[in-house]
Image (cartoon, rainbow over all chains, first blue to last red; front, top):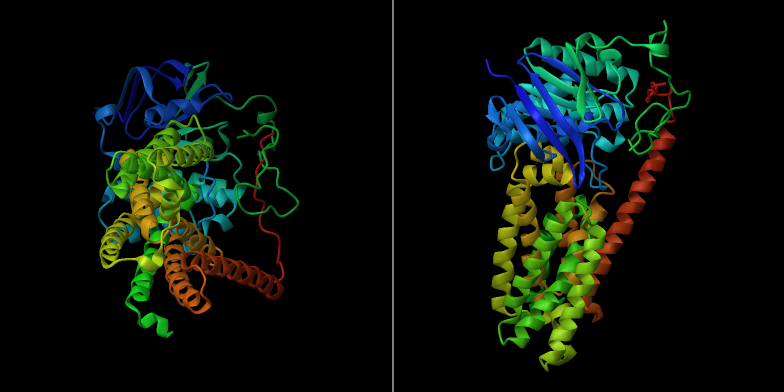
Length: 261
Length: 287
C-alpha cells in the first residue's frame, strides 16, 4: 500500500534562507505522527512544504503516491492552520467558515447542496460547536476558533489531517474537544500529521514522534516522555486565568513558554 | 420629483442604481482582503491609460481599460510575492498613475479639463449607449461575484487554506483584479471614479456594523448601495448638488447610522443581560 505522505531528502526555505536541509519522512495510512522541535527548528516549515505552501528546493514529496507537483486530489487532505486569519472586519459566521472546507470536494462552480450542509453540521457537532453555527467567528474564544478550523478540515471528509500547532494557546475545554475529535478521526482510519510544541493532552493519540532540529530529523520513534518539570506529578499544563479572558485571538497575549507571532 | 420625468435624469438614475447594486458585491471581497483603496488606485492608473489613448489617438476608454488591467494585475503579483505590503503597492500605483496621466495628457495638448472629465465623470450626460455598456458590465460582474461567492470567500478569508483546498488561487486573484480594473475604468467615465470606488467600500463598511455573517453582509451592502444611489440622484436633483458626491455622502450617513445603531444595541444587550458567571478559562499557558 502506498504511503499517505512520502518525503525524500527534502530541502526547503523562504527567500534566501534554507530552513529544511535534508528531511526524509513517511506517513502510512492510519499513522498519527507528531512533528516536534524547538521554535525555529523548521517543524512548521516541514508540514507547509508537504502541503506545497513552501516551495520544495531539492528532494521529492509524494502525496498518496502522486508527486506533489501533479497531485490534484486535495479533498483528501484537511489542513488546520495555526490561526484563523486576522480578519478584516467583514463578519463571517462559524457555519460559513466551516463550509469553505467543502470546496475541495465540491469544486468552485457548484452551489452547496444538502450533503454539504449535512457535512458542515456533522463536523461542528464533532468539535462541540453546533450551537454556535450562526455566530460570527469573531465572538468565539481562541480555543473555539481553533475548533472551528478543525471542523472546517473535517467537513471535507479528508483521509489525512495536517495540523499546525493546534493546541497552542487553547483553553482546557477546547483541548479536550480537540483530542476527542482527533481520536475519533484516527479511530475511523484517518492519518494525522501534526506539529506540536509539546505533546500535552494529545499524548495518548500519538503513534510516532519526529523531532526536527536544525532543518533535519534528529529523532524518530515513540514519542519522547516528558522530562524536567514537565514530568512533575500534578503538572497539567493548565494555568487558568482568574479574570475572564476577552474573546478573539488578538487579545490573546503570548506569554512565557508559548510561541509569539 | 418631476425632474425624474426627463430622460437624462432617468438614465442617470439607472446608471447610479446599477453601480449601487454591483459595486458592493465586488467591493466586499476587496474589503475582506484589506484592499479597500484599490478602486481609487486603479482609477488613477486608468488616467495614465487615458493619456496614452489621447497621445496615440486611440480610444481613451479602451486604453484606460488596458492600462488599468495591467496595473491591477501588477499589484496582485506584487502582493503575491509578499515583498511589498498591499498598502505600499497601492501608494506606488496611485502616485505613478496620476503623475503618468498628468504628463501624458499634457503632452497630448488636450489640457487638464479632459482629465477632470475622466476622473469625475458626468452622470447627467449618461447616453443610452453608456447605459447599455454599464448594464452589460454590471450584469456580468454581478453574476460572477454571486456564482463564485464560496470560492472567493474562501480565498479572501484564508488564502493558504484555499491553496491547500486545490482552488486556482492565482487565477481567482487575477480574475478579481481584472474585474475590479474593468469595472472601475468603464464606470468612472460615466458615473465618476468617486462614485464607483466609494460604493465598492462604504456600503460594505455600513453593512458590517449590523450583520453577523458574510452572506448577510453582502446582501445588506447591496441594499444600502442601491438605496444610497437612488436617494442620491433624487436629492441631488432637488437640492441641485453634484449627484455622485451626494450619493457618496448619503452612503456615509448610512455608515454612521449603522455604527450608532450597533452601539445602541450593544448597550441595550449589556443592560438586559448583566454579565453572568465568568466563562471557563480561555487560555492555557505552557510553563
